[in-house]
Length: 148
Image (cartoon, rainbow, N blue to C red; front, top):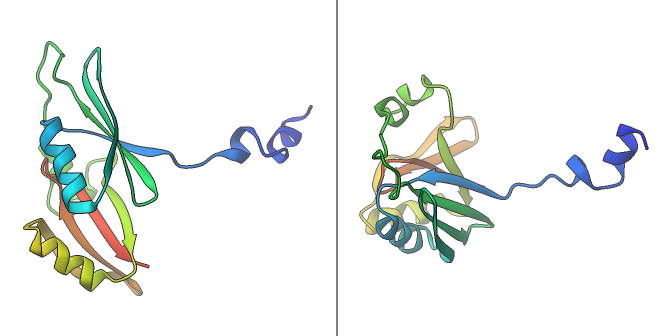
């Protein structure tokens, strides 16, 4: 079987789909509570792993994998460059943000404000037709929400 035949049969990379985003957190309980209370995710699984803890949350048509290095010999570290305020956040190479979309950004932004979430910008036009509200989770991770 040729390489192109394997791709065309709908398996292998032709079946590629997005599964989840993984992020390291400082306090598993606090992070689970935040993602469930603020963004409406649900806890699917939580377990101990050799390095600490792992939790899988589902919502918004995807999954978030939370990792906490609570069993490691060294404490987790925070690289401040990765948490720079925009536009400085674009300087370090690597992952930048979790990105979601909503049908009504004004309403979603109001709900986030009512929940006392840290809002970096609200309903800002980033490019023609691309309006978003950016927030931070309890560990300072950037979350950007666009209007569909």
